[in-house]
Image (cartoon, rainbow, N blue to C red; front, side):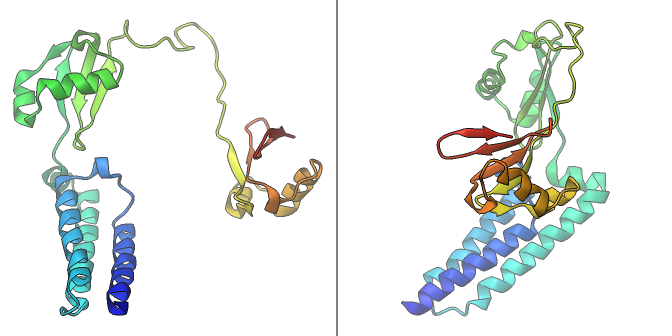
Length: 227
């Protein structure tokens, strides 16, 4: 029993390391090649957990070879468009000017039910409202609506909208995010001084963010604090 537990824990961390090495692509963005590799890796990882008679390296070595193969091919695809197209395929336009392109849908083996479903998810249930719809290599549908069907923007109304920026996380789960502070040219002393004015200490803060206007927003268990 102890050997089985050890094998499970060991393979878990090996698999975790391999997945981390392979990058941060989401499951929905995997290419066919990535998907096949993921299936093979899952099968290899299950072998040492199912049979203690086989040496554990019989699975670890193939896992590392697959990881190196995936990383190597990813670098080749990064600099070679033809190879990238071979691995991932090309996006296909399935609607142009409100007209569904049947021949492109046949090439992609993409049926009308899937198309209409994804159009509804994007908020455009009528194909005639779409200027261009592109079936991406990930299988997702990108939709560009016709100009008279898209949402109104401040530019359409002649309103000048300033850039709001993104909040910067200063404290998360009581831990000071030093790298984010450094990016803003700030340090822990500045943070403790600002929090001290509210009677707070970083270790007691669940989440603190620096807003674009320079204020600090504290998310507490029961209330929001701004300083």
